[in-house]
Amino acid sequence: MLDYFLVIVKIRLGLPAQVEETPGTQRLTTLQLARKAALQRVPGAMPALMGWTAATGHIDLAGLAVFGVLYIWQIPHTHAISIYREREYHAAGLKTLSGTFGPAVARRYILAFLVVQVAISLAPALLGVAGLPYLVAAIALGVMVLVRGFSGDGSTKWARNVFLTSIVYLPILFAVMVASGNA
Image: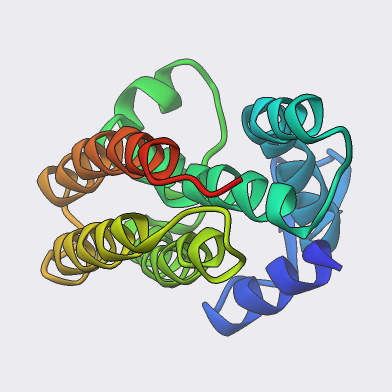
């Protein structure tokens, strides 16, 4: 299901239906790229779900919400890195969204997922995992990342600032979640 969501987002952002990396190589459809990217983010978010499952003895919607916060956070975070470190990625021969489609497309992608990130960050409070202090922090931190994201021009300086903001955002969000936890 997430693969199809990512495909819709990519199409809405104006990404082409297919990418050909170099002449004579295999063509990758947008769906294949989305599936690969979706799977690569799972290990980054899995420890939260594993910890939740170990603590509660089961996987439930609340645990998946905590997993979702980490999973979605990775998307704008890594694309911001790829914009401000594009030369290094290119020199290493690594393909990135900004390197393949340009920083303007990567910026739209970052902004779309910052909105999703903020929305998902409210889920733990709405599901009773965290209390009112968490909800207030999630809203305040969400406003912070949205202002940072939407106030920039997509430059490397903007991308670095989005990246640094994301580094501040996540630990504070989780610290408040733990401190105000109801689970």
